[in-house]
Picture 1 (spheres, helix red, strand yellow):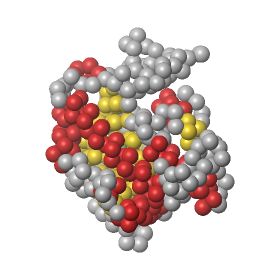
Picture 2: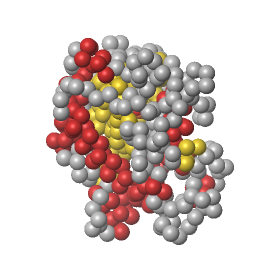
Picture 3: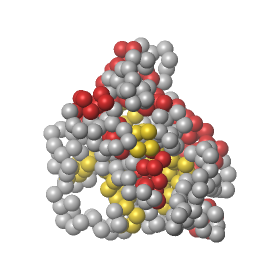
Picture 4: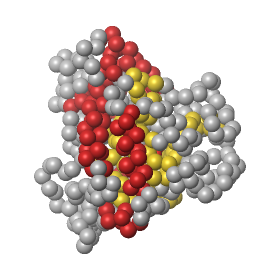
Length: 366
Ligand SMILES: O=C(O)CCC(=O)C(=O)O
Ligand SMILES: [Fe+2]
C-alpha cells in the first residue's frame, strides 16, 4: 500500500486528474411513472458513465425519507451497544450443527468475518430473503451434504421495533433496486422488450435485470465498526482493517452509513488510488457487483473497496445487497460481448450456485 494515495480527506492525495468525489445519479425519473423518456435517457447516460468510470456512485431521488434512514442506523447502533449475551441470542450457528443454524444468518462477533485471510474488525447481523423455494437436501457440508441458505432469519428481540422497521425498509429498497436495474438495462442500450431474443431461450432486452431480480435473493447486513487501534503508518502494509479489500459478489449494493468520514475507500481505475466515499446525507453509496460485471462481459467492472475506520466513534453501516433471484441464470449478454469485442468472460452460472460458493465455498465455480 506504500504507493497508494487517498483522496479527499486522508493523506496523501495522489489524484489522477481532478477526481474529488464519486459521481451522482438522481434515479427519480425511473420511480415516477409520469417522467419523460428524455429525463430517463439522461439518467441512463449518467449511470453508464458512472459504471464505466467508477463502478460506484451516489444515488439520490430514491424517495425514502431521511427520518427512516436515520431510524435504520440508530436501531442498528442500539443493537450493537447491547450486552454480548443479548447479541449472542441470535448468534449465527453452523449448518448441520445441534443448534440448527444455516451457517449464514444471524449475528457474527468481532473478528469472525475474514477477508483474504485477515480478520475484519467488525461485528454484524446478516439477513437474507427468506427461503421460499422447495427445500433442498442440506447439511454441514460434510461428505454427501451441502450447506444451504435455507434457515430462517434470526431477528434481534431488542430493540423491539427493529424487525418491523427493517422489513418496511427492505420493501422500500427493493423498489429502488428495481428502478435502478431498469435504468441499467436502458443504460446498456439493450433492445426494448419484445424486439430481440438471443436464440438461447433467454430474452436479452432492457428489462433483463428487472426480470432476474423480481424475487431478489437480497442480503441485508447491519455492521458495527469500532475505531481501529493501530496507528496510521503509510509505509507499512495495513495489518488491521475494518473490512478488507473486496468486490461485492452480486448485482447492486445500496449502502447507508452513519456520518463517519474517511472509512469507506474505493479503488479508482488507475488501480492504486483510494478515494474516500464519504456519506452524503440522504444519498446511498451504490456499487455494482460481480454479477453485473459478468452480465456486461466486463464493460462495467465491479470495483474494489475496503473500510478503514480510524475516525471518531463507533461506525455503523447498513449495506443492502439487491441481488439476482436465487435461480437467475447469469451469463455475458450478447450485445455486451459484441460491444467490447472480447470473448465471453464467464460460463453460464446460476446466482444461487455463485452465492453458495462465496458464502460457504460449496463449489469452486469462481
Ligand atoms: O461499511 C461499509 O462502508 C462497506 C461495507 C462493505 O463493503 C460490504 O459489506 O460489502
Ligand atoms: Fe462491499
